[in-house]
Length: 296
Ligand code: GUN
Image 1: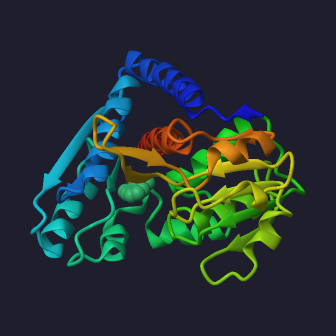
Image 2 (image 1 turned 180 degrees about the vertical axis):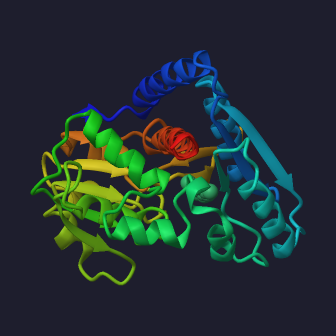
């Protein structure tokens, strides 16, 4: 069993991005700039956004966080998005979800200029992905593809079972793996809460992507010998023995599943860090596309 080490690959990607930024800056360009919009006080969102900021600064990007009170209206957020769309010093931005229930997340994502939509949540980017066109791809599924690629894990002809059909992970993951290209060409089964006999599918899988958001759901009896298991889950479980009062659990019962796997991602230290890596890569892509458009 080999660990798919998100920490190591994130460090590699950050080093590659830093080199690129230094080259651009030496030639007289400004560095790439990423902003995050954060509405309300969700604890996990605060942690994610802080980590995105730290990592983007470590690869030479300029980072901004725009914080808004829980009671901010949808109209106020849409106005802020308009400002960010028109800000030439900014290459890409994200609106951290979940948003408060009085704000329509999709309306907000669709207000983002598609060329700055580094989370790939805008409907235009979603449609382009489905057609295999150049687009911004949501960072978690893109990070998983990157992780498999860097460990030279072939997807062509493999049976990949994705568990979970969310807009930001499961569905785009199923599309990416089925695209006719070097990191796709898989036979994909997309399982979800209405799937019957889930175990029948997972037992046939060469690659399992567990993205249903239920702590320690995937157990050893559901996994075939030698499978590759990617764990997208990250649930806080109360644990009074920990300093923060919780521990993090994935969607996979790691201790019993890992011995059966050829490769498996740890939680933490796996997919979560690859999400950050892909967001940074998407920001570099937005920056490069922006300047190639300006210079053409
Ligand atoms: N909430 C959970 N994951 C994500 C993500 O990748 N981007 C944003 N904007 N919000 C999230």
